[in-house]
Image (cartoon, rainbow, N blue to C red; front, top):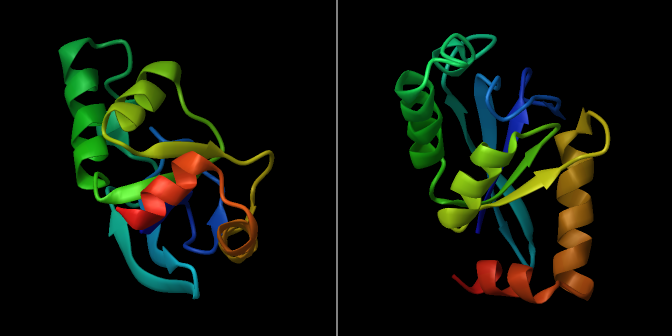
Length: 130
């Protein structure tokens, strides 16, 4: 299962979904995790999304394009996400995972690895098996 992390530096989960210019993508399974790639939408803030806020269809299209480019991921870790964007992810079968505070991606990967090995909830078991 692929897991993405909204990041400004490739090392920390520290970005809002819409603003994030980068997502670090990892492959995750019961035996551990492997870094795959960084998907770059922009250097710094994703202006395609942020500059179109409150501009109707242009904003909707920019958000949907981001969702589509992350559609192969089952989980996306982030610091914040708006309700409409979260709903778009869920409709695609992607679970948004909001972190309480910014921090290292490796810590979140370790937490997820432990959860997968010990007692994953049903929705996570389903994601792992798909």
